[in-house]
Image (cartoon, rainbow, N blue to C red; front, side, top):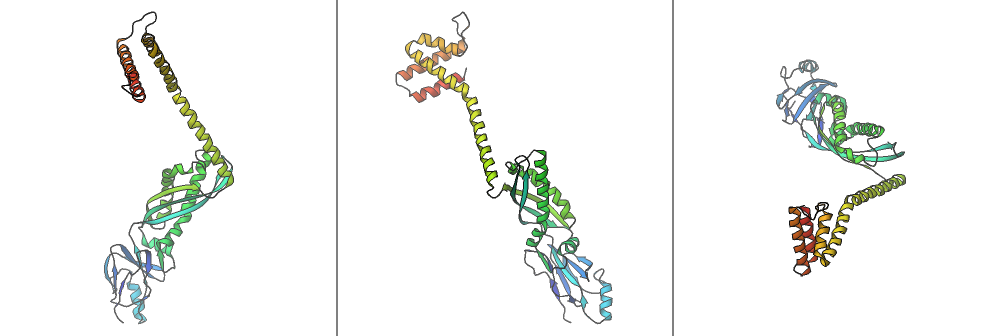
Length: 322
């Protein structure tokens, strides 16, 4: 029989591909690329794993093949073995998405939650991978492997979210705040699972988790929580600016007095800043200088040499130095 050259001709999307013919003649060669391994099976039993290079099918050349050769030569028939090619390349071309039913005990709601992301993995044990994942199929693509892994991702995320909600540290309205923590948890859980099938999970990302659909009860509570958050922000802003507005009103009053009587205005300025000593007309030297600059600034405004806007900005800067 003619000598065969056997090598992988599968597309880059394939992770495992079986050479379509089982009959292999003596003297045939198997070409294995650097990015893959070739595995020889007889009747479903692994005979040998071929690393990168050129391998001749002949007696004593490939460990485990001698028994097949003896049986074959005795029957005067070609070798009957299955030759698989499995890629060893790390790939991040694994986008995933799952939908979960989540029960929020805080608000007594059951809503669908969608999660999506990507992962990077590599096949480290081709024999284990072929036997447990590929089985009797003729090939396995990245899409097939994604479908194989999705139930594990769904189970891991469902357990994590249920645990967090049960502890009260998470609900469906802040579920997107745990992307990093959930990613790390899922990666740890999936790594041990995939390792049993000969795979190495190099990285795992959750890019988004969100409630999907238009559940009316969910939308109603979400709107109410949004209104409550808005009220809290406005209340905090009012509290933070209360002293500022009070100071502005005081300074406006001083401006009006200064315009009529500069001596009274000077005392009011000093009193408002707490710098006049009780029972005395003595003013601390630093604040006396500030008072002088404020009066000069007011005169500039009254004479029209500066605008109201410029006056207010310079006044606030002067007071800020006290």
